[in-house]
Figure 1 (cartoon, rainbow, N blue to C red):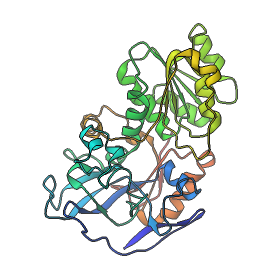
Figure 2 (cartoon, helix red, strand yellow; figure 1 turned 30 degrees about the vertical axis):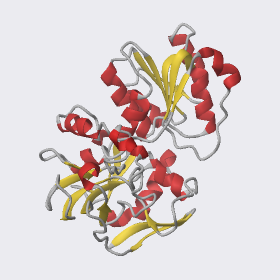
Figure 3 (tube, rainbow, N blue to C red; figure 1 turned 90 degrees about the horizontal axis):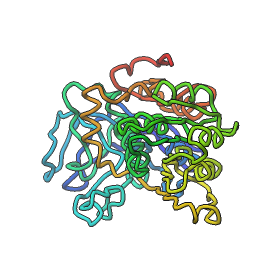
Figure 4 (cartoon, one colour; figure 1 turned 180 degrees about the vertical axis):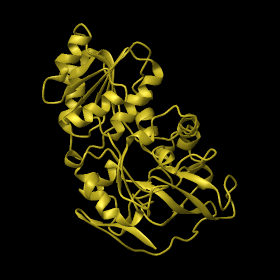
Length: 356
């Protein structure tokens, strides 16, 4: 089969790789129908995630069909269409019992495309299938479903839930790429008074307006002052960091009100300063972490009912064998306008660009 293989920083290719085999009694093999590229994959290619060994097939999000199951798998059967979650969970360790699947100590957590071969291939082995793949409801479109493998659970859990968004809040989202837009969409479930979107790219700020932002600001044109003006000088109740660079994190800590929350989603490849000399007196809560995907079943039901703008994030589609071209388009998002790139799925026979 073919897969997209990481060979070290700046080196990757779509190439022949061995077919996956059942290795443990909880495994399934999934034929990949639709897969997407994550900003974290770009971090890996840049060398920001050094624990990924060369030779690894990348990818941690997919929709596909179960083609083989191991002896102890109970929740799916061959022929089932499933969502492959970005997080794998053993279900037995302390963290899994507490619903913190991202911190699984029984062989799970974020392993696909990280510690073992991932989903950017024609087939993928998924360990601990009973908790790590989700049967798709009804005739749900693959392109709608695949964005629930990572983007929407991450934005919702790490941004909105850990940020404690409440009715009437002012929420600032710094970074309006796919994660930031999903945070804007899911924050609205809690009826905030306003959502302020911050980014450097005007096209992404336009997208933020379409996803429900009430106000937008260029990141290099004083967004802290806009937030202060909108809140009588207090600052935002919740600030969601969805970029992953020191400057954006520090901006978030300047933008939050006393007693507010900064929810860091962005994957940071460099240290960020924590200005406790300013923050200690403000009672600010800062959270960060990996998604647990406890919300995935709920988000799947909501998407199936048309309550989440999932596929609205997709700007480009490609057939699976144009993985290298898809990476190039996604990696040059500032010039290509890419938000989310999906390979395969119902429209896999063409390369398409959806209208903004």
